[in-house]
Length: 134
Image (cartoon, rainbow, N blue to C red; front, side, top):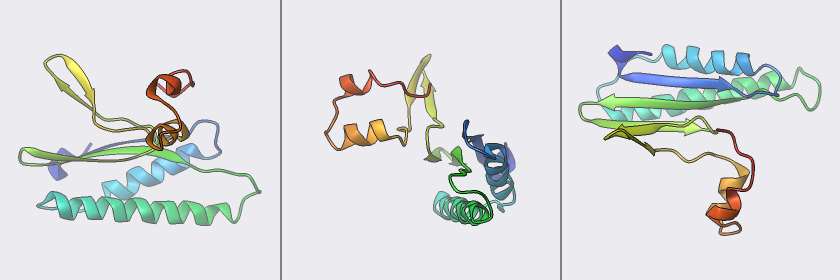
């Protein structure tokens, strides 16, 4: 929560994976150290760069751990500038717009089920029968 930098984020360590709390803490620390920027493009590039750096760092940690060890976190970031906003996300952490007492999803889960729908291999109705995170 960095209102002065117009940046808000949620990083949720992936359950069932080792060190999810480490991954989410690394993401938060990397985003927290970003200097404020005057425009969405600059800030968006900086956020993406930091997330890629954290990903590379976490992947490097895997080389020192037993095979089949996974470290992961989902993330959703809201950036604001004036009356414009931008959302950057990975995984199934979601962002919604609340307007007129109704929620409208702004993000689409990065999941195998949603990928199959996007490729036309599953219909939206068929996808609903799969268990997905809430």
